Image (tube, rainbow, N blue to C red; front, top):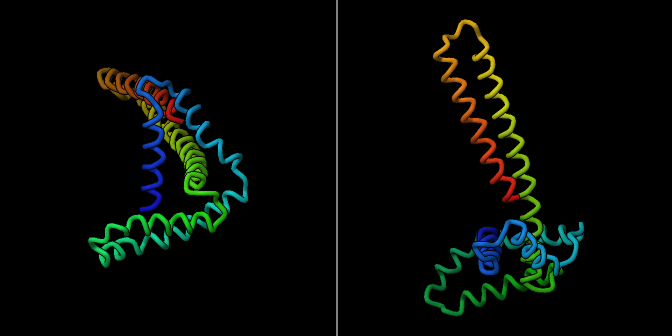
Length: 172
């Protein structure tokens, strides 16, 4: 749950600072500007981040019960926030925004690596589909009217791949 909240905070911040007409490059530059305040991502920072996330995950599992037991306590969200900040700072982060910047850097790297992997996998599926279609198109036993449908399917697959790959690359 905490990861979702952190993700929403980061994405929400980007939406606030980015205008709809901003180019992908402009958005990436604004993102880099924001997270650059935390400096380079080092092994030490990643280890502190991992340790902090482990503690926050354990802490987060008790939150529903804590809210249920303290229903109506308007100060509870503030207390919880202060406890979260205490965990973050006790693990060596300057403050909550510093932790969020490190989280954003790690999330960005993870998303890009996963996106690249997904593109590679999808490229493999596309290539395999095209290979199967080519075999069928070149098979003398298959009637010409079926081959024409297969050629159309191949054309659609290639056009969709080209279009979707362009958008996928823009987001990474």
